[in-house]
Length: 296
Image (cartoon, rainbow, N blue to C red; front, side, top):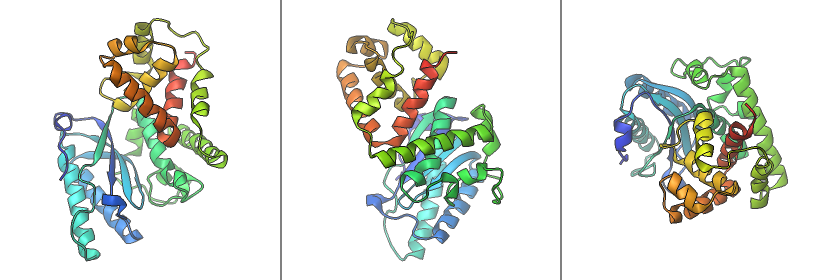
């Protein structure tokens, strides 16, 4: 059963990062025909529910989507896509029961920084998994369509130009961003996993600059350069991590962000762990740093 989030029902014209995983790491795509069928259903969903699909990547045990709603119907759209695919998949492979985990994950995206970071992360999923050494080589991702030299005809439902307009960028700049992140990812793999000291150095290299000493002024800078983080937990949690690294007290952060002291400490430990294990969080941290610490 798909979780119906009231916030999703009441919101239209918003961007979301969708993650759907196979139950108990079941392979939801066993062969290319499965992926082709899924993309056909994705095309139908985008038309039936008036969704703009910006990016996708199909892995063996999960898939990611980056999309924008026109109407407040995300839950209905995802239910249609998932149930249609499960019905087809179960008939084909003579199986019964659930294919996907009970709840798909949906992350609301409210600013261009997050939008570009998520799209870059999706493109790099196959590289991080070791399936290819360059994201444009993976056939079951939308990223190859961004390349002007690609021989693939972009499907009408993949709204690349709309995505680039929202990100206030062009194909060349987005490709360069993904390639830059790809090089960092490959470098990390060659060097092994980053330890927490290496991750913390990402902040320490930047924190020597002239930044606001008052937390309210710092949060004004965040709003000016990143937009509102109120409904974006990932960005808000990374901000908690940055604020602590910048020397603001737990009490100040808790009061300013309307969180408890205990919540601040839990968030800090969670982000610290995620930065060690998840490339997406490291990528997002670096992009936030660039926005906050670079001179305007």
